[in-house]
Length: 170
Picture 1 (tube, rainbow, N blue to C red):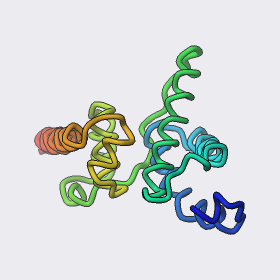
Picture 2: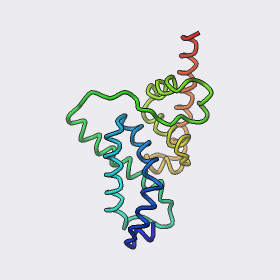
Picture 3: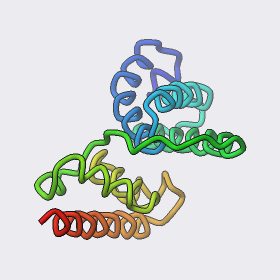
């Protein structure tokens, strides 16, 4: 990131290649729309470019860029709330490894869609994208223990929903 701040195009390309796929998956999860997520990824990198001078080299790049992506999403959400449209179905999202054996992918998607958005976001940030609770707290503007609680409750909700779905099928 330091060389990118100094103007290196190659450094930007390495950062983009390393972060764009996980940003796209994260934003797809938040928006429920892959096309919109692609647009927000581009907006995220534009905002990153504009604010590259504010990056502190002693901190990791990934949480900083994800925080920018979340901000970009929230700004888009505010804009779209002024002109509501029908919501799309829950997109295909990565499934936490802890959940793989509990149900099929469709049941997991339905359960993820039924969890409160703040719990789902913390759960996915930690279990899918591997952020620490301190990093999640920083991105979401909450304490680390609150991020841990959201993730834990989200995982608990997932288990409960999947068990209930399993009982209905039996």
